[in-house]
Length: 288
Image (cartoon, rainbow, N blue to C red; front, side, top):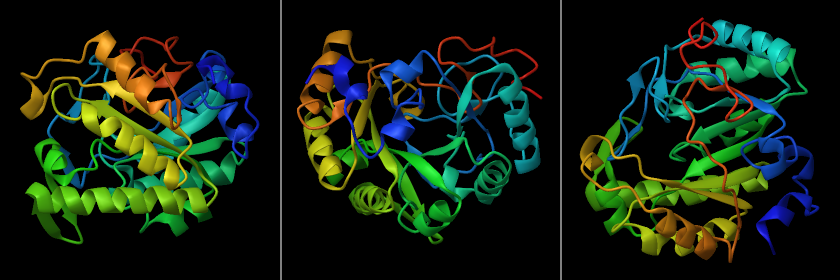
């Protein structure tokens, strides 16, 4: 099936995806989303991730500041005045589910604006553990970043994983994280949530994992996949980015099993607006 027809396919998620600019190619150019930067802490360390407070750098893991739940709600109120806002998401700059402020924020937004789609982006470590909380808050869309299914490869991507006060590293840590990610995808899908899987394409390392991830994610209920290029940072700072050809090949492989989203802009943790049409990052809106 051609990519441009994906959004026209009838499914139980159509009412969500047709308005979500990060799930639908058509909605991407019509509707706004806002990311609320309420989650600074993270419970894993990805080799390619550097979280940062910065007004200018445009990438995941970056925000101009951290706000609390009440300040986040004010951002939503302001965004509704200025944009065709459909989605309120939390995507960091750390791990959403490792920060209690995330749950406070989701509760406030849902109570005041129940018509808005609530969305989270997570590494999946705590997803199955927190699924009942997310259901009660009416979270409807979930993105889980899965970069490998082979723990040997995962050990080269994840430096450590922290769960219930215990820090795991190497193959042990990667294996535990991967198991929790797959468990979380399944739990989210069974809870009626639309699940997207994100995979960072790291050339020379995880190309062979792409199809495996697509197959296993689909088995557990994911319905869309987003393959994004490595941004060389942290321990991967000297690693090369994938070429356009490599990225397209990975997407074609994944599309045999899942629909593939191709318009991801790898947004900041405080992004707001219609993707690609946001105000300048240095605007007062981003920084309160």
